[in-house]
Image (tube, rainbow, N blue to C red):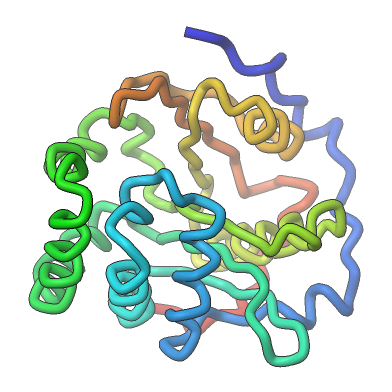
Length: 234
């Protein structure tokens, strides 16, 4: 198993995030009407992931279901009326997962079935999904960032940093003391970015045949996080 880069810096060593008011103003909560565009962005950036392998129709149904879920927390970055990036997270992923299964399976199952028929090998991996909550660790941290994607030309413009800050600020405003993110151990870019924000390696596990790491970052007292709400409270 390869190791992530050197550990995260102490929070006291981090400088406040330099906010660009124009970028911040272009970020808003994700809505039902965004589902199709968000699905396209998800598929383009994470085409080899399990959910993307089920196809665009499934992803669109998934995001339509998520925006109506009380535990979902998502934001989009918009330019000239076009959604060009997004972040999808949750205030409690386990509760969100159960809610979706209970209330939206009738819509998700047909779309997933089409994806499985096209790529039968996905079925075995799909059945493993429920195991995530038992193996990913950090059960004491319910707030989680799950998916984040932007159009390629936005890289280097700090848009992803802004949308992550909005997400972290919102969690903090809702009383969450910490947030977690899971990524592949071998994803050096993601590991460096997370550790630069102050995320620390909490747990290692194997999932979907990959070596994974769960990172946790405290929100209370973080120099880049202010408890500011931009989303209707649950």
